[in-house]
Length: 507
Image (cartoon, rainbow, N blue to C red; front, side, top):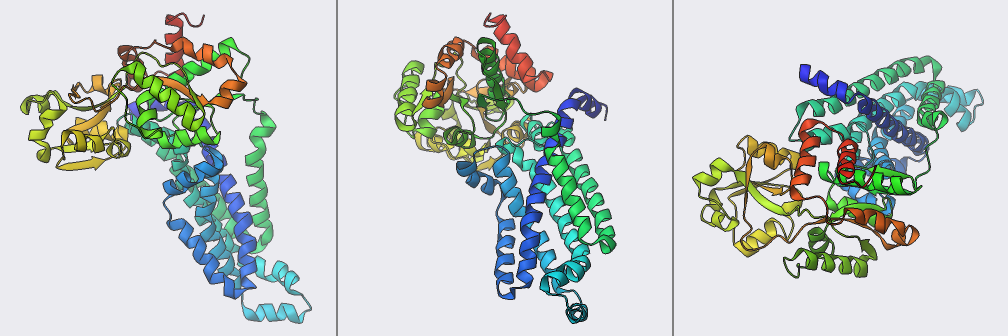
């Protein structure tokens, strides 16, 4: 408990910011879902033939995995709040639509006939009789939708939408740091309970207030949505720099931001922790971000779908630079010194017990080995696919998991081998042994800024500014900076600024 309070105090400002983001995304999604579903539900009561198929479609939308919906929307809407809100609207439609339709249909027919006998037309009967009587049922559907949306919003952090999911992902990324995970999960649960309580009160009052109760809820939702704009208009942003998950890309993009804002009048916005390579690259192509740090080996193998021409770092960079320019019209600036290549890592005890020094040594025991790989590594040609082909190794069991879970799994003895990066901080913290890539499967992975050529054409000064990092940051320096963030709780910006000062790149 004491450690949890320490984490809370150190991240209190971040926590309140993420709660507000979470609340905004949830309420925007709910408001739009209500605007769509309530009128549609009313219309379906007048057209029974269409009711079943349309309600069935909204039910199908709820069965699609949320991550798949987000991935599908990125090419059309980019990253951030827009695809997250669209996905959440799709998940929130069914309870509201079904309850609106059911609530109105179940109004006593005798009351409808009485209203008609009093001379009311269909619209007036709806406003004066049907909607007031159906309102408690409709509000119950809105309550269900609200709880569903608040819970699902946590996954929106995977595409840079913000919210409490960022704290949960950060905790997972840091080897299952339970206090960080709880710092995100507990407020999300409390937020759902609080909103459910408020809507339950509104539901009870709706018996007397009728449609006015729904109107009051919608007015309150609009005020919450627009309040940030009324309090503080957002500053102009010239460039958006994104980064993948983990400490390393977040440190690098903070360096980019500091250098650019020190030497120009450009305003830079950061989108940290956007997810895996495919998500971030799609965001760059679509234009949601302007720059992100990419690895030379990843550009060749993943984006260009080629094999590296050699294991020479300079030749690999030139191949990546020319290929990205030709195929995607993107500019790949000069790389830094460190080589964050893939490696297979294990504990020193397991390596000694099985006489392991190289990846080839695993061949004699591969059917007895349990491997813990990320989904990305498991599916890459410069990952497990390549290991199977080049080394002829088939592990007895392969468990795929998120990066932070993977390091906890080897620390607890649940797996024997994991994929790792040479600059990852947990290599030091867990005292892991990297097996030598004796057949040179993994090409060099040097980090460098990647951007669309149109961005460089618009701001040509970026090349000189960001190339100040070229040839800098050694493997040891990158490991140390990652360690400061992951285990010493220092901020990305603090670590980035300290390095730039030490290198005399800023005052």
